[in-house]
Image (cartoon, rainbow, N blue to C red; front, side, top):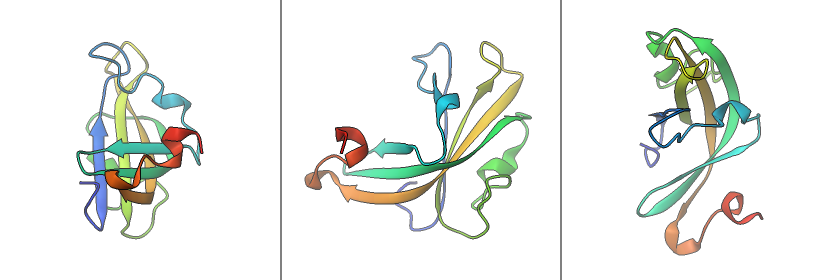
Length: 116
């Protein structure tokens, strides 16, 4: 989970249908901010790398130090997984990020959400 001091927080979402939570995940670029909001805190990750296409059976992408991510040591990572190409479930697209900020909700929204 994002509040763990080390590990890889993995999320999967649809690009099309079911609310399309990862509709534009393919547009993320290194340095872009990814914010996870929980009941008690905001967790901000910086997009680091993308694997444009891999097999759905490639579970190494969600290991604690995800293979293919470019990360070489344990840390606080996020893995976003979605189907690709669009409108199919043939392959998976993977996006990785590294945590750069953690703040309680009582301290307000992170800059990435308020345009700061």
